[in-house]
Length: 292
Ligand SMILES: [Fe+2]
Ligand SMILES: [Fe+2]
Image: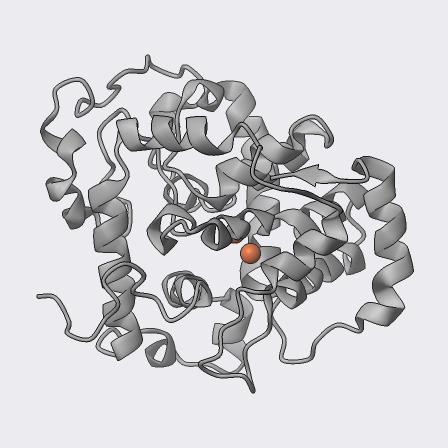
């Protein structure tokens, strides 16, 4: 059943709604114990849940092997825009959710809260930088891409869709579902071929990974590239495509995930105080301008 008055192209009120839904599916274990009951996280009949469902219907319908190859060709040329990273954050912040200005933080604040939580725990500085950069790929929305091609849990294309993927029932309308090249367990891949040989559904993870791949150490790149790959880092649904190196590197992906999901606090970080530290950090690893 399709809900009425939901935007047909971009059903989510903002990209944050996807992340709020992730919190419902993967609640913070500490919060459950402290002050929240499970019911608070599991209200599936809310209007927000309907938009999330519609968002995943579109995502699962349109993310085909051919679609991914086409988007890789279109965006991995990085010929759309060039700007210093600080301008890129300002650009990203145009993705403001105006539905609830009192409680919602802008994109930059989510990035800073993630990176500050990583820094507080004493992790390497390149991991702090991952926190700062990991959602930079959401600028794809500002290039006119629909939400379902920017955010959402990611998964391999070119082989059978796992039933562990959220709303996997929607894959039956994906053209690849009935295509014998793509609908077997391994599809176009071979057993344990390694994720570097696997095309993931298109979105902000792959895009930011490709943008950063020459600048950061390998664990950082895994965190960027697979941070939305919930079907693997939470559900282990694609062990059959991973090699032993992937498994080693996924320890880093799993280490990063709670900082992404659970670092939100209502207090915005004090950017003026933090600025010198981050300017140094960015200058240490990244060129003066980034290509989008
Ligand atoms: Fe993300
Ligand atoms: Fe994030």
